[in-house]
Image (tube, rainbow, N blue to C red; front, side, top):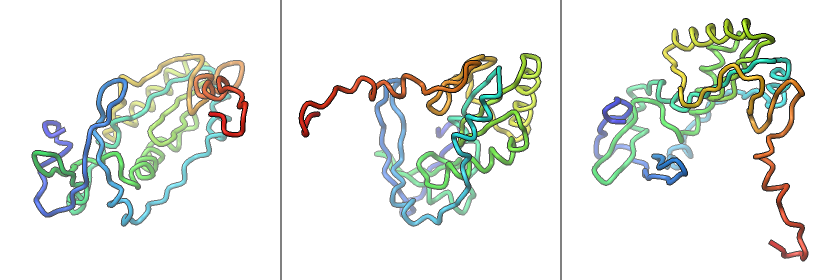
Length: 206
């Protein structure tokens, strides 16, 4: 992140939240604990679209493309007079973010507001925080819609995460559901734990 310009060395005595590595299946994820910063942050409110409304609109499509900007926050600059508030500590010093980091309480709403301002006027796109879904009635129309979305994102300096793209699909998994020509249904993977739950035999059964 330092080489990419996402972070810079901070100053001793400025804000400094603890940072650590979280082990995941695919490796480790860098996390900053911003709970204290968030507790004194003035909330930025931006209404998120209702999931059922999104699913209802997507159900009218026959072709789908989906990608989310997992690194999208890093494409938003932090104001110079606020960078010190993103400071975090590691064993070899204090650093601060030049780009919006994950973990700040207002980051999702702020990012959603930006995405809505860029893509909100397109009837063939649904945006849920960093999930972007394009839907169309036919293949040729879908190709046009994809190009329009990519052009708008590129014009606003937002790049898609190529590792998380799904293009030109007739079935799509999104927001815990599967959508295809047969309709909308729950994603079996999301309800497997409940379906496989053993029937309790006593009041205290686990």
